[in-house]
Length: 252
Image (cartoon, rainbow, N blue to C red):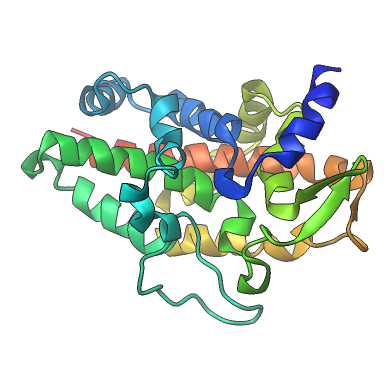
């Protein structure tokens, strides 16, 4: 009942908050922690300082109102036309920036602690963003931000629907995502852990056509029910992606 009462507010929140909503990013961070070597978890927390895993996961979104961080805005996504191939954006994008921070963090011992802290917060957030299919979407509707739909008679963007509405309406919790992760075989988990950033991007991109599998601009309950398991699975993958990088970087 509470979720239905909150729905009008969720649907009308501004575009500022694209990426998984804060709840989605928190779930990715929690799921990643579950898969970390205990010593790795301690090392990561050491460099995060007073910042929690959940706070690290939403830091990039929280910096959006601060124009000093405007240079980071293109880093949340990549977009290219149907049938086209990824090309690096001159201003940076989610693929190139994830590749960069992972490369930098592999030499974290030679970095200033504040730089490790910043790279970790970028890593936490972008691993979550990359698991959301529309962050590898199409430029014509600005990765779904300009694609207006209606759910339960309320207007929203297709992007925000996938960011937060499906999570809220589908009651996608940590336990739901953990069950989705537990369904993966050891071989599947190992395969995800061994993926590079481009493979992660292609994995999300492959899901984009299904995101648009509805008629007109009306989103039905059937559409949400059909996609909530996919959202939970993608959040679970985001947690595995993040933990695999952290376990590799801080494996000592």
